[in-house]
Length: 340
Image 1 (cartoon, rainbow, N blue to C red):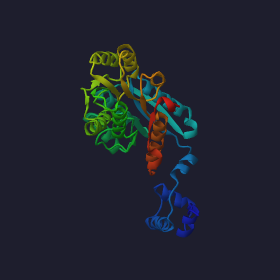
Image 2: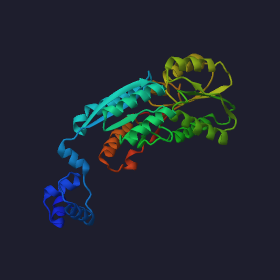
Image 3: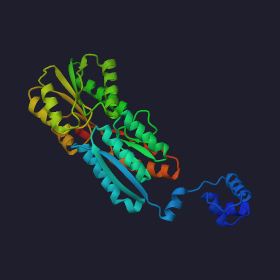
Image 4: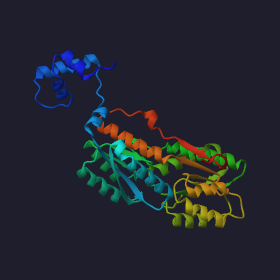
């Protein structure tokens, strides 16, 4: 059986009230008595159940999620998962609010982070724009003892406590292998549509993609990256212009803006066969897989990412360990044949 506070009190020869003061680091306990209690704790191997203690006290965890304000379906889905978490707030003892900032705008993100240091929430989760000033702002928060989790896109070299998202280098490598295998012996050019190279997830996907292409599919030439800012209208224009190049035989969409991509493909690629790999299963990409406009979707579970971020922030606020295996976000591959 696990030792209890009653066992500590008996071993140290003190009252339960004294044990409680020592455990909660409150004053009013003589040094010699405190040492007796701490010795009993060590010898008994007592580990305090902080989560249970907080439940008994009715503690609530104020958490903030910072998301980019953009018209892309994946972020809408992520927002919907946070709203579901808000519905569960009473059961999970959380008080969650969201803040939207302009997409790919480091200065706006820094301003929000600096404001939060004065509000003192229990934890902060953010979709990070990977810029030095954002990293510095996050590091300041961590040094001030705020738990910080990056969500979907990580922050290079920062002190953040945890990243809730897929392995994006592996995702890019997977996309390259699928595209190369699907194309077989064909030779030609590959168009790549990204949101912005300011976010780490897009850079890492491109890194993994180009590495596998260079090593294993040298007959497929990758064209300069199109940065669509995850905006469907910008993506539509860029892809439509690129498809004027008859040498393009494949497309890899490593960000969002897939509504624009799909529209351009249907308008401009009706007279040739293109192989297309994209990210994130939404209503639009699902329909495009069904009608053969897109061949495969690489998907991350936004709900798992939100739940993971909440678990980690609560654990860090309580000084508890994180169960890494539980928080690993898997990468799903969906074809027409296994759509959920």
